[in-house]
Image (cartoon, rainbow, N blue to C red; front, side, top):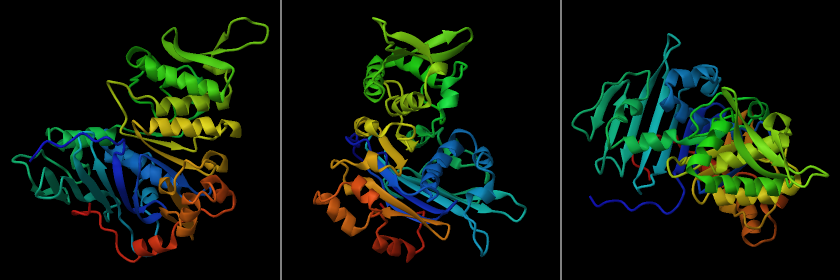
Amino acid sequence: MGQPKPRSSSRFLTRVVLRNYKSIASCDVRLGELTYLIGLNSSGKSNFIDALHFVRDALVGSLDNALNERGGLSEVRRRSSGHPTHFGVRLEFRLRTGEQGHYAFNIRALKDRGYEVQTEECCLYGIGKGPFFRLEGGKLKDTSEDTFPAVTSDRLALVSASGLPVFRPVFDALTAMGFYNLNPKLIRELQKPQDGRLLKSAGENIASVLGHLERNAPEAIEVIEEYLHTVVPMVHGVKRTAIGPMETVAFRQDMAGSKYPWEFLGMNMSDGTLRAFGVLTALFQGNRDYTPSLIGIEEPETALHPAASSALREALQRASEHTQVIITSHSPDLLDDASITSEALLAVVANGGETKIAPIDEASRNAIRNHLFSAGELLRLDQLAPDPKLLAETGSYQVDLFGDQQ
């Protein structure tokens, strides 16, 4: 087998299939380098992002912790009026080396209120074409490898399989996904020094991330400062500052009557400034030692003035050239740009408590392609809806999580 060519695109996840995850009964979508999930509040946009986040949490920590952090299995699997439902995830990917494959599993509830990994599968190139393994009920059914580590039904086997060189790149890429719903209160507070390679979900280690970038990627700091100054013109720079055993972020800001900018600690900055700084840090945190495989951000426009939308759009696009980006949004201002293509949009709606996700309908796609309306204008007109034909196709068959489907 020839050596794969490194990918030129930042796209890591190419396809996501979900079954019975929270409000999502069935979902089968393709992702690009930059994807906008568009929908009203409570439509289920966050549940799609959380399904990917769940995979990362279950691999970084444990399946049990990932479930408990979300309220337990009963809160994760979709509630049904019929028999108890199982939930599952299939992620098709392309690694930075150019290798393609998929990773999938489903979780089954047991009568004693426990659970088990009913089926788990990881495959590169296709079953029988490259490295793969498949487990059922915590037992190894088939693998390409001569030896395989011990597994149990209450844990994802990829954690153990990451000790094998052929599966380690898959594990590393899935655990290098970052998901963000940034909290200005946590960014504002003094923080204990932590691992700064990957920003945590709410921004609670942002000072350590900034320090890591100062040492390893000063050019990333310059990009963050450039966009932050565009969004908040009075701010000219940021840096990590130690205060005893703790640390925080300091901002250089113009002050009336002063020839030079003054320095203010994060505790003195507005929510909008801190959230903008958090979003930009999430987007541009990659460096020569560690680059996230995917960044998911919940409503990055929150607390920003509408006039900052163009700068935020440019930052999202620039970041997606190096790292795949997924965002949720219901902001017409953010989408009000002719450069946003119909292929970058996934529409999300909730019908009877069930979330539906698909590319936008054909009429809206044509309106954007022919430059009749921008995505933002269509959103203001309430014309960004999932394509009913695609939803019908997905609903007409039981979405399969396993096997070769690429």
